[in-house]
Length: 294
Image 1: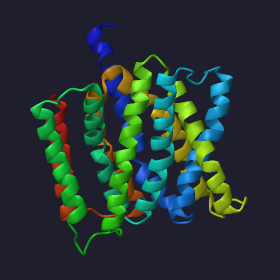
Image 2: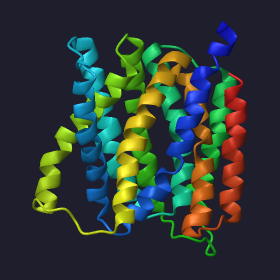
Image 3: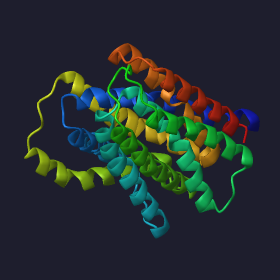
Image 4: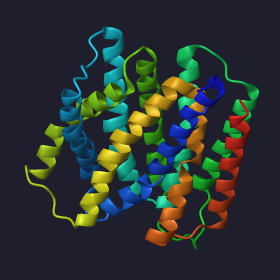
């Protein structure tokens, strides 16, 4: 395989991941209709940890032992599997799936900024221009309100999702740096989820009183999808793509994440786009095109 063709493999992996991640707002919305959103966020992490820990032990993947690798693992585990799912689920319960999906498109901006700060480099003007256009679309989406909007969308819910994105991006960079240091992306994900599950388990037991909430199989199925497909399979592929393709370069691909979520929200939840949402979508994707040039 040539070097040129090999350079496209991280891009293809990243694209596959963002397609699956695009369905996250819809799955979260469905689960939070029947189960308290705080519990959904913690259950998502706990179920992921119950699968990740045995898998890591079965594959004989040892957790990091060096101090310079332990801290990035703990940071990625807390940000990606504790802070983000809890804040995001609460916010998504308060807004529409279309809004939630498009707000997550701000993740590449935060990921690129964190990476630039850690790597002590200055992003190009083209990258800044693309991110500025995309972020302007985010602001329009959050602040622009239309009474005919299908699916309830609140400013508080949108802001919680935006705040959750800050934690997710921090977790991405920490996990990618760990992968770049030579630690396997599979171990980064599996032990990161396990650490997150250990952190939320006591709080989940306290909130539920030791018994699981009653819900339909659809609600539990969406939580399982969030735990095993989004959290485990998605993060494995994403950390690998970031580690092999470059954090800033792969990060901009995540601007495309809302596509599958918008389609799924339209057909499954019956949400309809408004003029402001369409304008914001155009601005966000225009920013992708500009930022991807660098």
